[in-house]
Image (cartoon, rainbow, N blue to C red):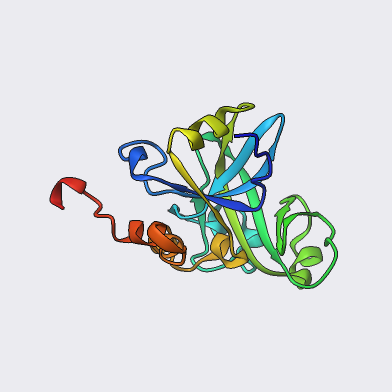
Amino acid sequence: MGQKKLTGQLLVATPTLSGSTFESSVIYMLSHDSDGALGVIVNRPSDVPIERLLPNWSHVASEPDVIFQGGPVSTDSALGLVLISGDGEPLGVRRVSGDVGVLDLDTPAEVVEPAVGGLRVFAGYAGWAPDQLEGEIEEGSWYVVDAEPEDAFSQHADGLWRSVLRRQPGPLALMASFPDDPTMN
């Protein structure tokens, strides 16, 4: 495939991933280079309130203010994404793409809060070895689509898979109506 610039884009699971860890997932790509790829699943809210694990950040969190299941790797660690308000990189934030940045959760909330318009916290992430993701895309496991900054902070995360597909041009938009159980079609 040769493409190494998926940072800031979305991977949308195709129906071929049905029954897998990534079924109906939407992944915001945080990095993609010759060392591999890393992203977080942005449409899997948990039942764990941010207040319980990171009380200093609960008042900054976007609704729903719960920890999201970011992926199967390092599920005991937390990763923060923020929607950056304005130009520059606030202290403790590394801009990923556009207005989305990765937050160092050890940074004091009061330092970051004025510069961000949203926060989402993820337990774990999705990772790929070099060239692994390219192979999965070539075999038809993922649709690669442009991200909108709000995708990672959607209040309606459960419906994100369908809404991201619905806004795509052409035949890809039809996938939004793909039944949850294809045998029922």
